Image (cartoon, rainbow, N blue to C red; front, side, top):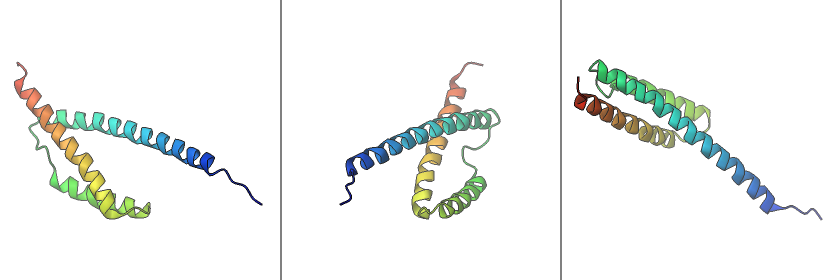
Length: 103
């Protein structure tokens, strides 16, 4: 009879998941470093924190990418909404910090 070590498989899958989670976190950190630069640029040139046109284009793009990857569109949209809302919040912080700096 065939014997299979399910615990070893489970551990292997979990190690892969842990590595992917770490990669996601590092990718998010890099994304926020980049969006911080966008926030600085927007603040320096008195641009709005939110670009509704770009946001609409991006969400269409996210849905397409998610669909092609086999992910639920609502999940992708919610996930990306959280990330974008955080970037916009940080843009506000950048703008506020530039206003209180001495000239």
